[in-house]
Image 1 (cartoon, rainbow, N blue to C red):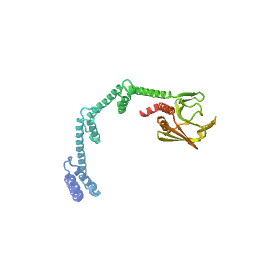
Image 2: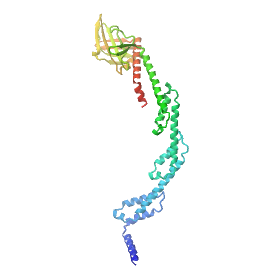
Image 3: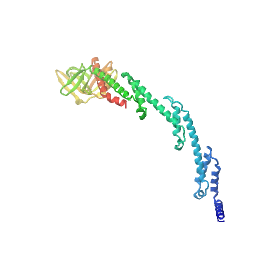
Image 4: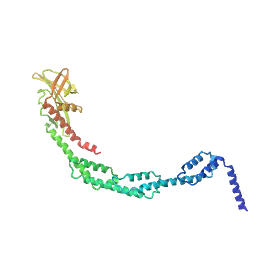
Length: 371
């Protein structure tokens, strides 16, 4: 009897609660019921029901009976979507086939699709091992290619640069694990060292040949070495000229400009205006660096200072010109036509300076080039 009474009370409470449910709560519960069996087309209905639940006020939401049912339908829909994505990914993986260094598109497509899956979906992919095997094969092919490129360098000559660079770039493109599998990497480093040595010897030979065109003078007091054009006058009152030469330590040579005006009267020059085949340059001089002297009825104004980078342009222009005229100008002026022998001497000095500079900076430039 007591059991019958308890059941009657429960039915009564259900009827009371149902009778008290708001119309909004009834509407949303019906929306959830109307979703029915979940398919891949259920997204809109589920989303609308979820939005309707959120839109209810607290009192109406508390009266809902189908909230848990809605959550289950969302889980069912997510599982269906993931299953479809997984099937698509598995199909892409199955189509990978045999990979090669020039045939990786299908592998990359499958990897991209797999990586786009949510974590829970990735766990459902049954044939991921095919991707792993394909990547392992591709890795082996990349390593084998680098080994072959290194072996293909052969005896190193000055013409080996392209092969060495190709092998170096291929090696750098490998992962660290793959690099560790390149068993002949030492051959590549040895080849680069040998090529660098050969190229430096070539640069050194170029430097020595350029310096050989100049007269070498060693100052045992200062420890400085000078490379002078053979046409350089011995005395400052010999003639007017514009010349260049090298001076300094063997590992730190600088280019110098030497200009000299010799005449019957002073011109007090502080500027050189250079015209080389119609192209003009201007070189300003520090007047205090110019030595003024006289004797034997002549005067001379002598300048001897280190050149700067911009001076190389007009020095080269003089060396390569059919006609070059330098105007010594100050309070007065004097025009000097540069002789063929002086033009050649200037060219030799600039050539030697650039060859020395190239040799001095060779190791630095090589390091930067291969950085």
